[in-house]
Image (cartoon, rainbow, N blue to C red; front, top):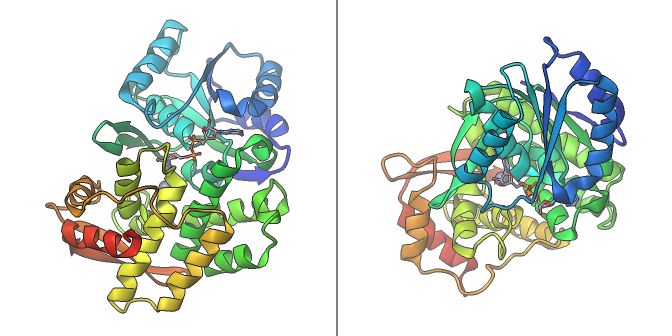
Length: 354
Ligand SMILES: NC(=O)c1ccc[n+]([C@@H]2O[C@H](COP(=O)([O-])OP(=O)(O)OC[C@H]3O[C@@H](n4cnc5c(N)ncnc54)[C@H](O)[C@@H]3O)[C@@H](O)[C@H]2O)c1
Ligand SMILES: [Zn+2]
């Protein structure tokens, strides 16, 4: 599995060397860049300019709506028209949406070409760009089509986070809390003990959080690359979270925010089954507030029936029943199989309803 490189101001110096050290030199380079992450563009152009291979750059405005087959097709058509071949390399620079769709296009165009990830969000550096999963959304739900296609390199340059909006930063913290709950209780203590301003700017604290969360994810993914067993634990909060995200719409509830609410629902269910102590849910509730993450659903919660239908679409459902990840103690979770979707919908109502 590809190990990410973390650091500050490392993009320009690292990218050139990483490409030159690939097993086979690429024939050409295609770059997909998030327009909001234009901070990454100059170091990328500088590095690629020094390599001297034919290079084509496409800038785009990512959104969950555009993380679609339609947009993938447009990206592939552009690549074909611009002369992609089996030896080309695709670089995806942006948040999780850009690395997901870029990686997915790379997995499929000409039956697969190599690619590299340059995550530009905290969430991307701590989670989305790591582990080789790529995906696009369908109108029916998130990430319902995709492929396992690991990038050749992942460069996480924390200084690219300078331009990240506060809400996006908080989303990254939501996913980092999840990772701490899954496999590294110390991350939760670190978030609690470091000053609120330090965990919300691109300095040493952010570097440490992203790196430690990334390492936990990598450790789990390496043990189970195709998600047959323990990798499922990384979906903590996501079964609930995806249903809430689809119900509210991405504008009202961003991915990391939805995952945060999902964590509270999972903790509620754990507590009701005596798998975790009530103090654990209160702790995560307080931590989410510290990270400026919402602890309530935006607006009126959809009826249970609607949530049940959304939960049934979860990719991890089996014969209509859910595998739900439940937290036990910080750093440890377990999987409960065969949960009926209406039962999970009722948990959402008990945790987030009036
Ligand atoms: N493949 C995986 O294993 C995996 C894991 C977790 C999440 N994801 C996916 O990742 C996505 C969420 O990731 P995300 O939060 O990074 O989303 P994102 O790509 O939408 O980025 C968030 C926002 O920040 C902007 N942005 C990105 N970099 C910026 C920068 N440096 N400065 C200013 N603005 C910048 C983007 O344009 C976007 O508006 C979801 O689609 C989720 O499904 C995938
Ligand atoms: Zn996620």
